[in-house]
Length: 523
Ligand code: AMP
Image 1 (spheres, rainbow, N blue to C red):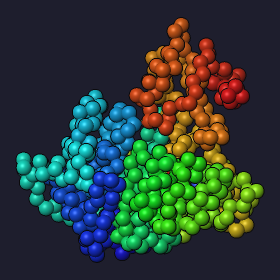
Image 2 (tube, protein in one colour):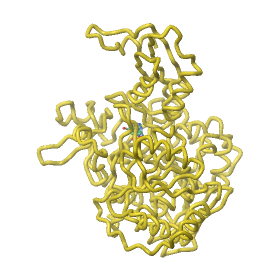
Image 3 (cartoon, rainbow, N blue to C red):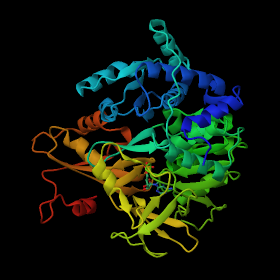
């Protein structure tokens, strides 16, 4: 365990150690040193404190990934608050719901989105204070000038230390919710520190490392990117959403920025392997490739490891509720005849794992069951959802709370777990967690949709493809363009179905429920 009890103290210690070192890079735009980032996040802390933010509050971050957003999350933590990163690319109503749901006291928002977000929040009756940042100004200048402008009105005074306890929340990450609304996973400083310390022990990063930041900040992969990097005085290379999906440009960036520790969902690594033109560049700096979030198809892993033969490869597994809880180093080379995915590996040293049957009894090695996790990285619960939180845990005779991952696994004789699938309706798409029920709830909001059932099918290329089966009473059904536009306005991009299939009425079971089995056969 760290000597510190707060996540941001890891960063502060690195800033004291070497203030000149480069902390964060916006490729092609600029960078910020540890000392400058410390000063900028201190200024934000003081402004937040003036706006009434203190220990136990929440601060929303509605910004594209940038030095501004890194400074904002550090400023929020320094002010004693939990940060809540929200996807500014998702429909504004979803963002406003999240910010309202956890009652952020202040939201730091991209100036170009401030009016839209303000009206969406207003419709919900929420009026948090906001700090609008011009994100077209690079390298932290946007936040700096927003704070300058606020200082000209009323100068900020240095805030007292917030004095957080390890159990205080450090961040809330919203994931897809089966009831149709995103749900907030509450993670404390202790949760985060136990994970970050495990990363230090397992990957031995140094100040010379250059970490990728590929995942968006509302995705739990970002915790490793940001906080492990900053703990070790290393450099974080921010990768924006556009370039992050563009294999040839991304391939160039990884080489140009001499990234040494890469972490992402497998889907982008598969794209890099197929379309990145990796053979054109020098990846001499790359020493570790970490992937998590979904199964990495072996054929793409094989291609990737042939093109990038030097780094070590790790399959990391875990839900947002625990962050990484099992890990596996892929032995290279990947044999030509292998086609089954690699295991998710052994439980991480800071956690304990059990495989339980439906009744909560432990199953033996080799038998299938649900993977359950206990230990210091397990979330505090879902924000204001006590019933869902209670359902998420199994409490054993000793009173230990085991988080039920919902993932079916079996354990081999070498204590490595193999991932077999989900027990519910959650799927992963490009690494994003999608509850099919949330898509259905979104579709039901369309006035002409009478019934909606959403199913996921295995897809050779995309891993999973999503079909919406719909019925309508209207003679004139919505056109494909209309329904797609509606989805784009109501759902994040990665939740929009690939196919829409219309019926007069959806097939029913004998108990008059929508017959999902039949729909699966129809495909
Ligand atoms: P998230 O909360 O977005 O991190 O999603 C967690 C879910 O993603 C897990 O419960 C698994 O179903 C899936 N998942 C995460 N990592 C892996 C992995 N390495 N292999 C297979 N599935 C994974």
